[in-house]
Image 1: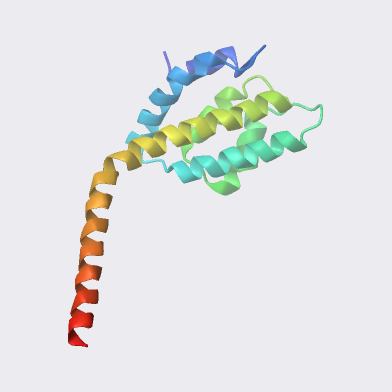
Image 2: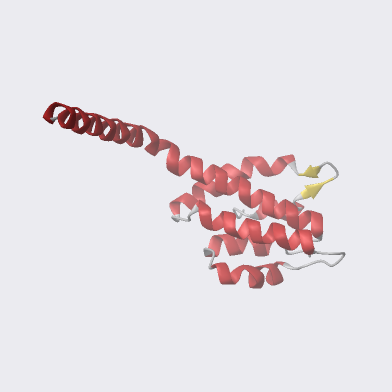
Length: 144
């Protein structure tokens, strides 16, 4: 079973974005983290797809058309693979917007996995920087 097989069932159901997509967000984020894919790049692609969806009338676009439309952003191959797989059946406006939201969910989860573990180190660094700045301020004050 492929990592992207869940997309065979589509992105949208009668209520909107399928609830069944959420468990796959973490799985995709972990896989993409291992491949060093940047969340910011995913967000750019998602924004492009969302804009495309908002301008799409009654037409539908295939996964290949979507991939061709975002290539100028130079997304990573796994991102392109997900887009192509999601568009194996041509996507209309709502489904394309759903794909954009799904990519944002993945990017947010990926960002959390990358940056949350770094927060303690960043906090410690800011404390050291703050202490150093205070010492410089005190030294200047004492110097007159």
